[in-house]
Image (cartoon, rainbow, N blue to C red; front, side, top):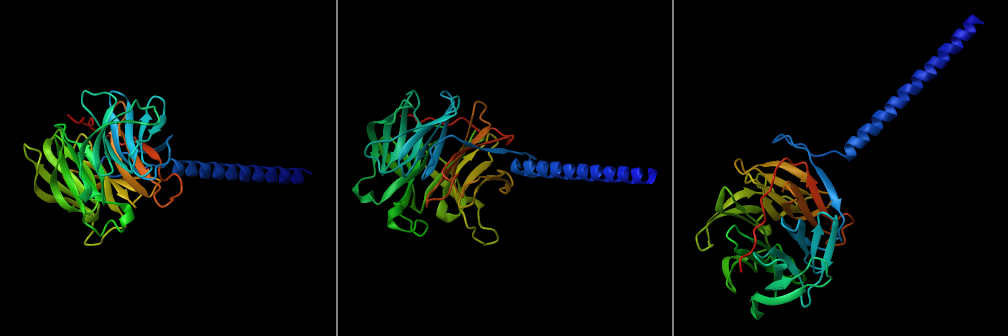
Length: 352
């Protein structure tokens, strides 16, 4: 009986040990899966981790042009092809959307200095002043500031931003309905000057991201023509005209062209660039000094269109995306990236 009892006891002990091992294995597996679900991209440069969060917003056909309003604690952006202007209310964690009568496209939105609830947008091939309280379903068109005219009806404005001096820069591209966008060069890049669009650059394919090296050097501009597959740098003279074009960063790797193109862009307080990748499912951080990619911020949408720093401390990166071509959710969503360990700069307002 002692032998039998001892055998039973050993058997029970073995089963208990086995059960504990299984429980431990299951717990470890669940832990690893949880870690993978929450995994953030860690790069050697800065050793930062980050979190990507989808924000409550309509899915955009072609989300673009995020602009953070520090006073109103809101992020404004556009859906070019719906078309619509949108406002993400940070405190409410809610996004409002509005249309603009007569607009076949709304390509960018910028804040206006000294005029609350007023904005300048690119609609079709015009630059227009609008008014919006941030909640109504329609915005009010105040007046047209500039119109490229009948000879330019085959193009529309695309990305546009305001420089540290309050000047608007914006570029055009051929309409999507007219065919392949990357293999044509009918767009132009402009500076707005008292009702006139002053040409800065011609033969543009898709005029896209732009940012400035401010506060380090407010007369240094970075600019993207998507088809060129690079980021160019310019010196800006006193009048705001561009000089001394150079390639700051080439997306090609040893002559090999990537499957994605550069889209929208911003920079942090240290002058490093953050470039959205259309077709790349990521935002690339490019170190200002080394001109190398030091971090890739993964976004759960293929068509990443633009980026802007915001939030109360300007340390959150907002990311717009597109569902163009009926990409599955969450394509077209608005995202927020936290934990990057850097800060952006206040967005500049246009001086009219």
